[in-house]
Length: 173
Image (cartoon, rainbow, N blue to C red; front, side):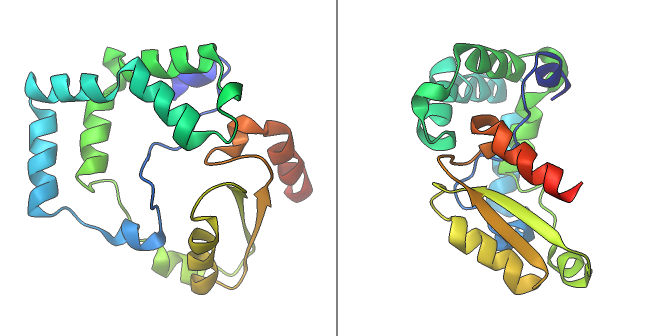
């Protein structure tokens, strides 16, 4: 993240899973996920699998087909930075990916979300496939949750339309 920010990029959340609902945060490591993590942490096999997953073509596919509403707005510089960051030794991307796949980074926030009594605001890309279901999960847990959708954006509105995101930030701060 630090590396991306130094190069003028807006960091994105680490998870790339399609269905990121609150219930997924309750997942704990299973026998299968522990095996996946073990394999990914192996020096030769895990590195080979990670390098196959983090090939430039795969990163480009994710950004153009999954993350951005307009695939032509993904700059070469953005792809270069994320590809390079995925392969820097100090970043430990392989270990982050193995921890994500093994559910070691999940945290159940439902109890905390229930007890918060101040306003919460969620911004979501308008073209995100499961946007309504995701937001409804938060609203069910806490009726103080407010939300809005940013037009012509998908998973990462902060990268596709940073000006619209800043307008919302200016409203609240």
